[in-house]
Image (cartoon, rainbow, N blue to C red; front, side, top):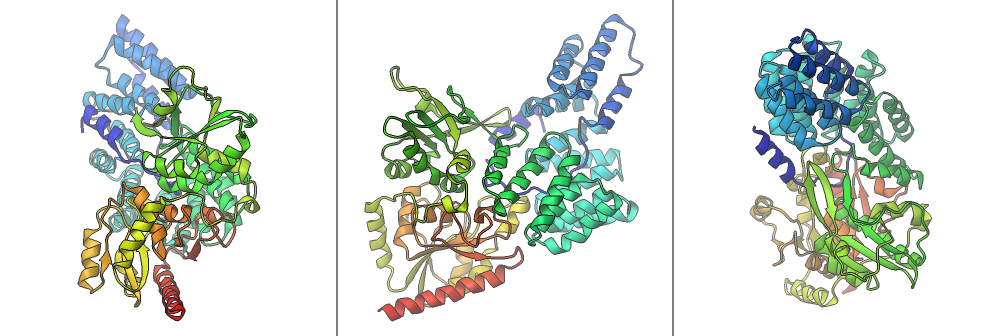
Length: 600
């Protein structure tokens, strides 16, 4: 891996949306007290030559700044040191750590690689770079770096543990378990290893099985924040909400500053929302925008962000965030904002470009534009060019707000959610067109089917079932199945055809032609699937939607329904309860077919 290729990979990596709790098992911190002590030892005994003496003074100052968590100051001193000697591997390593800690990830990778090239025998550099690569989703790179580290430091507990975490995030669960078991036989007293073994199980949805491993980790090290956090994430879907929140609170007290603390706060916020502690949960959910979150959105606009200013008569920019499903969920408050600004105000809405016409039709008095998202130095930046580049004389934007931030203001309780079929208006001409096309398929209940997310790495995989489990639904007599699943599903469809099941795929791009997807959803008798973008679009346009929800789905807000889409029918399941959930969907479909037959 070269610096340039790693930096390019970092900027090109796909956006991961719809936050889910992330298992905490990775060991070590490039700026931990032990790491800084190690750097200090490396600085001892430097040359007394004038330039080298100045170099050492700068690097000692950089390390002192790191101890005070002044990473910008540390980076500046390291850069000054590199002006004296650009071949100082130690200076590059110090610079890398400081750049990482302030979120300049591309520069951090480049600095780590320079340090590694100059100090190839220093295993700590490879280990530090592997953790950053893992955090940023470069799992193959992280794996190679950890193998390099372990070749130099065989049997290293943290390194072995971190390699197991990387294998886990690649869904290579058996390999991760074998690696951890082997190390536990050597180091049975390592709480860290027991904790990570538990995360391998919980990432697969095996929550009950994971608990004893977290318990053992906490027996060995009661203050291990990672184990507290992971046990909370296992307790929550098992129904122990009080225990989960207690564990979150305890974990936060011992969490490492930065990413680990932000991630734990995020999981706690989702749990607060999930138990119905509104609007507290919505307020805490602001952590999603914390710069310490890897995919925190930074909006590029010349307008200030709104805090508590009144809306009446003002010009407001609402910026959609996270993924398509999130813009569907959070967009339900756009109408409230339009009403709040009143006839003398103005609302601009920036959404995913594929949704612009759908939102514009639904909110004709608003000015809807598309946003654009790019990675700059590894950070997500959301740009709204059509708003910031308006001609002179146009009314200025008073302030902007993230779309989800409107929830605390307009949905202070579950009773504040409107009881409606949907809030977006599909294109009526397209609905009519697809209604005619569906009728040509012959008799039977027309059922649109989604079954997976486009991103299935790490813990996200536990939220979706393999396609073969859907067979009882596909074989429901009296139905015509319609494929609404975007992405490469050729193997799944071939599998269904080989089993004698016909699934019709409509002739439009299921990923990009969202106006047609919305209209098709309304033309169908029913849309079924897990809570992904497609089912959220169906629910938001008022299509009849059945949604399979996970046990830790916070969107239910402590109720037995989906307040964002109150007419949506839910099929709740355990992580390991797919067969039962699929059987319940099949039984419900049989009842719908019978009802339709009786109606005729």
